[in-house]
Length: 296
Length: 304
Image (tube, rainbow over all chains, first blue to last red; front, side, top):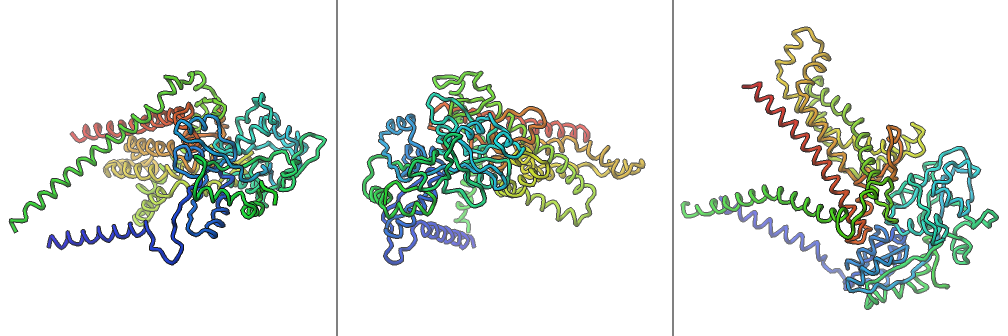
């Protein structure tokens, strides 16, 4: 009886092995045989955009598989340095220390500006405030202003929401809004600023909480929150973020979005990036609330 | 059949060795993990990436600008754990008493497995619940500026700790000899007096262990906490801080580890926080098992 048992075990092992190997290589059905993979990781701001591009591109080139993941600009660049991705998405430029580390690893990251993005400052729908100046937003986030009444709103405490520090959006907001773009300014976020791990978390809290103020890439903003018009100073003009106001430079909180490759890209990655910068691909951007970098 | 005798022997040889290896592997893994934590975390305290001690003991955590004060994070973790204890200890012990002493047989058969199922809920699912239902509710109900507070995290973690507490405390209560209760009841004590004055004190060290283990679980919990506590690195002062946002050690590691450049100051500080966490839960677990050990010695004394 014993070897029947062993035989069964053996069969089971073989079947299991067959199952796993089956999962690794799906039997090719018809023409779309995948020949190339592109790993694309980084900024949560860009992830939706990168997904839309990846889908469209795979429609045109079925032989290429592009996998897109988020995690934050820093995460993407770290992965690029460690050599686990082909393209890193970043909503900020690569830092000097990251560049040095990459060079120490023997690579020379190449930068591509792939889109522009407006950062919308958002409040709850029930908040009567419609517009703020950069200085006022800076004062809110640094803790100078902590009641909506000081800005002509209701008597409510201000709850400040921000992205986590691993987000490129966080760094950009710190430099351009909190510090008003002045390099000698050392203003910091007020300590009681809530650092939420995701864009969705910010939208969820702002849409529920009338005390809250938050900021997020325009592509993430939904109908559930109110977008504020932002002015450079009290005399205005106060401008709402849009493709037009970003491109003509009227909206003050807009930035470039980047993709980085380890070295000068070749082959499939090169073709993909060329396509990304083509007018066809840039058209997809507009639907998602981003601003194209190439004029049609 | 005699010829085949080598097979079971060989199997036995292999299996014994395998079991031995897996037995020792736990010790080896813990040692390796601790070594790894130390080797990555200690450069914070000495060496070229050293951070001055008064900077580490500062009250501002903002690694982007090289503020590495870990006190708000430790305070945040303690605050959330305190919140969890406030929820989980009374509810957990109450449930254990109900299951062990009061509930009829059938209720007991349903309740205990159900409580244990609660323990199997992934914490990220609890996090969803917290962010979508609990935090808006708490904000309105308690009229807070925001519902993302230490207390919200505490309630969720309470939910994670309760099953542990119930399970262990119920076993301890169950182990109290029936003669104790009979004696108390025979002296004219009511059921409540029996539970409060006799059964619970007799099971004291087991219940204490239950509480310790429950709390030990909460301090290392990450995902649910990161989703609902707001992650603002504010130094908590006083009980009112329970209803303000906090940033815990676990959430900081989880949120920032992906970002840091390997080998940077920030990287080493995160490992130092890992060491602190490790030491805290080690202390809790060692205390818990010391209590159990004492209980065993006492019961041995009673028996002899």
